[in-house]
Length: 221
Image (cartoon, rainbow, N blue to C red; front, side, top):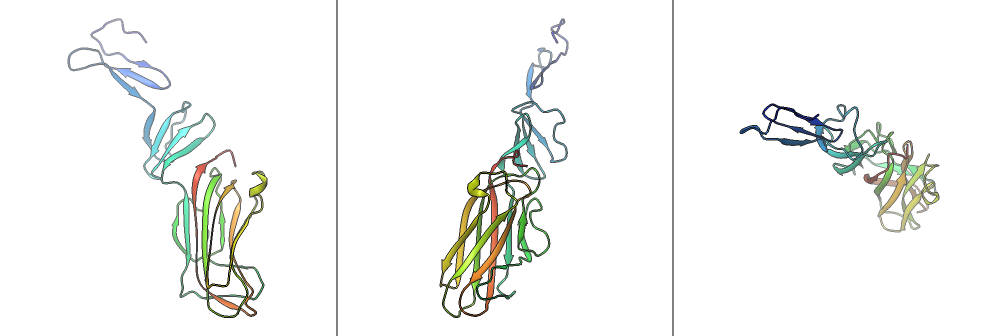
């Protein structure tokens, strides 16, 4: 819009900025950009423009509209932190891969974990690269190997090296750890498993399993 009266309020509106004010003393022209809007995860702009940034007060995240998806670029990235306390002993049979239930949620930002299971599921819209880490502490006893294993399933459309991940540490020590960056699509599941070959069953004295998104790829839906 072009102002015909220089002393009256006017506004020029585009899909990315607004110019307001009359230019009169005390009412200068002002540039109001829509490049960074404060919203919540349920009040995002209905018709965003490409490159528009928002800050969500409920998730503490900064996102940008790509033209197809809201991309997380800063702030509190999605994450989980699950624990099995040392007081919650569970048995791991000899030479048998055993899922490790995780009853305590220190953090679960977006519903990755349900109940007390050993399984984490990537929610819809949260495909991307994740740094995942885990540790299992075994009771002392016997010889052989001790392993912390993170297995991935339901990840068929991502690159081949991430379609069937079995990351582990082999050790005769009581404590084993693993950490790996993996690309995960929505619906993929990660399971924390224990494996040991001491010659008899061993108790698992404690465990933790964490994951943090390091790159959001919402197209992996």
